[in-house]
Image: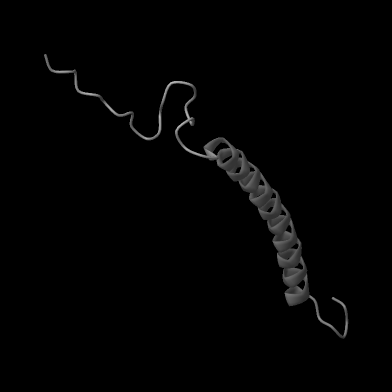
Length: 69
């Protein structure tokens, strides 16, 4: 009698955890989320600084250096 064909799990999904078949996948996922949060934080700071620079540039464009008006 023939043995049933063994089916390999796809994408490293094996009993024992979703990332059990992929080495360091849990750590990589955590690192990726942390990196994303850091990037979002710095993007927020950059947007604020760009807004301040834009406001200063607009003020400088409308103000005469000699008279201040």
